[in-house]
Length: 231
Image 1 (cartoon, rainbow, N blue to C red):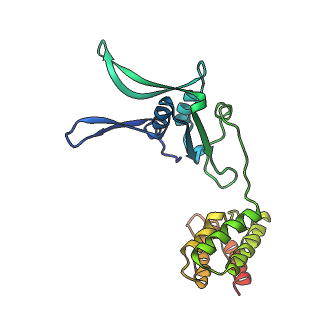
Image 2 (spheres, rainbow, N blue to C red):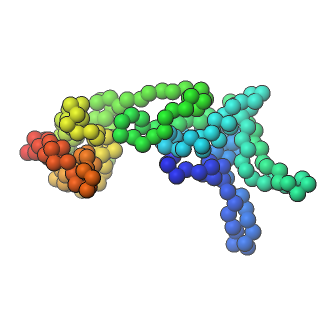
Image 3 (cartoon, rainbow, N blue to C red):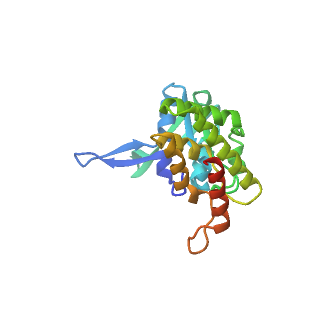
C-alpha cells in the first residue's frame, strides 16, 4: 500500500497489445477473486494496508461484505453491452476460498490512515511485537548467511538497546527498526563496514529543523551511542 494507491491498483485496467487492441489486466484483488472463483484456495497479502487511502479501501470493504456466503467483486471491466450500456464484470467466490491478510506498522512516526471501523469489522486485528529473542535470531541468521562473526550481532543488539533507551526517554523521536539492523549485516562486506553503514544511517534517527539541518542534540546523542558500542 501507498498514499498514491488508486482503484486500478486493486482491480486492474486495460492495456494495449502489440496489435493495438486493448486487453484487460487483472489487479491483485481481481486476480485473487478470479482464482478463488475457479476453486483455488487463495491468500492475498496486502502489505502496509493502512497507507492506502480510505476511498480505495472502500473497494475492499464492499468486496468483503458476504452475500449468501459469497464475496462479490465488481471489477470495472466491461464484458459486453446492453442497449449501448456497458455490462460490468462481477466475480463471486465462496468465502472459504479466499482469505485476505493486511499488515501495517502503526503508531507515532508512521504515515498511516486511521483504522476504519468498517474495515476492522472485516478483519481480525492481531498485534505482533518483535521480541529481543526474535530480533537476535533474525540477525544471527543473516550473520550466518553472510559469514559474519556472531560478535557483530552482539554489538548490533547493544546498539539497538541503547538507541531504544534514547527513544523511550524522548531524546530521539525515531526508532531503530529491524530493517536498519538487518541491512547493516546484509550490505557489509566485513564487520568493519557494519559500523560505517550505521554511521551513514544516523540521519534516519534524528529530526530536522525547517532548513533540513539535523537536530544537534539528537545527533550528538546518537554519535555518543555509536562511540560507546563501537569503541
